[in-house]
Length: 613
Image 1: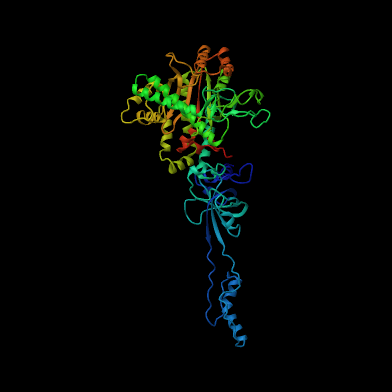
Image 2 (image 1 turned 60 degrees about the vertical axis):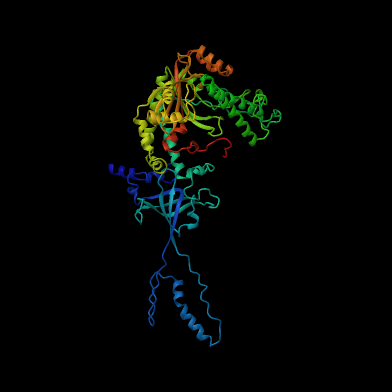
């Protein structure tokens, strides 16, 4: 009985919902598939590369003069006729009676059949990094049909040892080709070998056929499963938060408006120019930029009021961003409107009010944490803030009742370590591929996250440490109150602490309204987890549970309080200390793979001016 079970375990079991065997079950074995020799299987996939080898023609032995020719057994009829051609020409010449005829043609009309060949295909079905060599004789399928890169085949055959020893431990000798999905080589974008990864962004529907993107997707899948496993192991409930919302979780985000009114003649209003927004023209913005620039220069020279300088720099940057948006959108959509409420009567819209694509699910998630305890969500979030960044990203978000800042920081550290450990254990082939192709330090970096104790420093300590740096000049001057930039964070984790860092207690003016104000009145209980190469992966906070303080913060930021009445109800009735964080999932995938552009780890990236499918 035991031996029979062992035989069954050694077999490559077909996929439950089709008759094909997934290549990972063959090539992912410890023996590379050698234990499956002699098995008959059906495999399917797409051709990565192909090679055709012509078979040598049969050798014809020329007979001695005066003796009857001795022909090999495998000589064809055509070859027999070819050996008699000189003799036939002599007979024709004699029978011609000496008449003058044109010289005999050097060629004959006898058609010589095309020599048979063997085609060697490297076939991948996306289940693993390795590909399977499939050997196909030209008598089974036309080489011209099955050889182009991208061709889909379904083949039945027997697993055998390769005829020539190489990198493959096993190959499939095809006996039947059950399906061929041909390719138009002139139009197929992946016909060229080794395309740069950035060139694949315009072909999102084909890019998973490449080894790189297929490996990214398998690692993304593994990290997704690890995410759910971590929260299930730690007794969190999975809650789906809405994508369409009436609130802005941060209070100052650029959001995508959701409306059904555009294009409906009954509700259409003559749009204003893109150069007008809330009564301000582009020319007025440019004039304001000039004035604000002069103010910044004056404050820099005086060096007396640092807080005023920080505020002026922030104001100038926001004004510049607005002007750039107006100019860019005018080029793409001349005459289009940017004004919202003045142009659309939202009372006639589907939801009878302004609604948006969500930028964060933390506020909605807090409402369930205040009833269920520990909850998490995992889904897409949308931002229209920058032309340089993707507009749609997936976020992992969690909230914990009866939890404070230190608890959230500990949970964030444990979560990140769990993800790194899981991907190292479950994506060995993919990790090795990325280490060889893109980042040789990939494994060491993931291991360091698992083994390191994260350094915990306050925002003030981080600023003080950066101010003491003398061997590096930062592009953005380090002052208390600024948002730490990527170069600041990189220097902290890479040069000063040389390990992951958790920075906490940020200035309240650079963090969302719902984060708990500390006793100093200047900072909030917020934190960022910063790691080498990737920068900030996790942002979190302890949330404000005091009704009076929450109302004050909303007034300070000039937020429309009516949008947040439902959220404030949580503080009016049964308030509780709670904390949580959000994880930029794509940035975790980017960190694990060693790639550099987040668009390359998103299946269908969306960014300014790009939404092709």
